Amino acid sequence: MLQDEGAVSPVIGVILMVAVTVVLGAVIGAFVFGIGDKLGEPAPNAQLNFDYDADGNSLDIVHDGGDSITPDNTGSLAVSGSNIASNGSDLTWAPSGSTASNNNNGYVLGSGVSLTSGDDIVTVASVDSGHTVDLQWVSNGGDQSTTLGEFEAP
Image 1: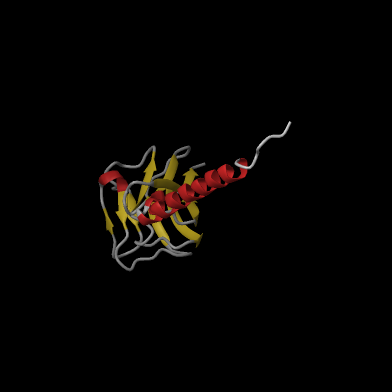
Image 2 (image 1 turned 60 degrees about the horizontal axis):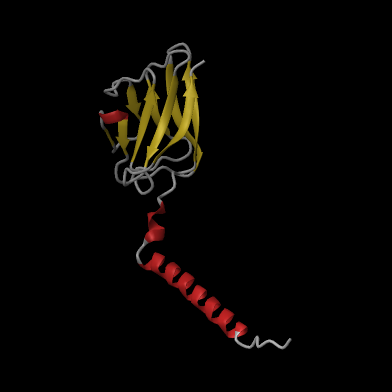
């Protein structure tokens, strides 16, 4: 009836100490090797206003509040849609000091350019009824993208 349970407590203690050491080593290793930095940069949380002119079928995309869109948090912006010209000829990018490329209608913000509330971003010359236009954000590294806003013409 008598049992020797004196060794159970030290064994459990050693197992717990090893587990804590492994977890600490993993956390410290993640910071040292920069694994936590590779999670990616978030897209700016910017509200957009889509101002559609039904008479001229044009669409102005305006920054309407939230985070500024700057070269620090944005690699490029792009407009996509079912009737957007592939060479970007129907797009007029508003901010000066920046460059627009014809590749995927991309737009790279110039140094010192900051899009804030009230700033025009881009005008799309021809958006027919029922067509959708998206404003895409691409990260500085080009490895992430997301849709900042979407509009469907009435």
